[in-house]
Amino acid sequence: MVEAIAASGREVTVADVAFQLGLDRSVASRMVGEAIRSGHVDRGSSSADARRANLTLTAAGQAFLAAAHDFQQHAYEQLVADWDPADQQRFATYLRQLADQVTSPPK
Image (cartoon, rainbow, N blue to C red; front, top):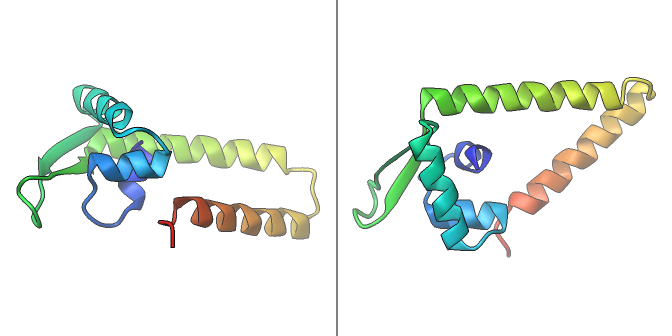
């Protein structure tokens, strides 16, 4: 959920989080509520529409996300350590393409 908020690059709502994670809005809302209670996410007013809440990561949320990225990178490096460097690069490219496809809004 913190990845969905951080990756947007724009104002993020609970509906955006639900879409990014493929969840029902009510489930995403509960997750966001827990992240707010744990100090990882702030809920503020949208600058575009006062009826909407804008979600942002707190410093703790940003630190959590950085630690998750470090863990993922380390796990990836261990998994492909014995691969040919060209295969590592090709696989990384495919993973980036897949991630972009999964997180892009439907056309």
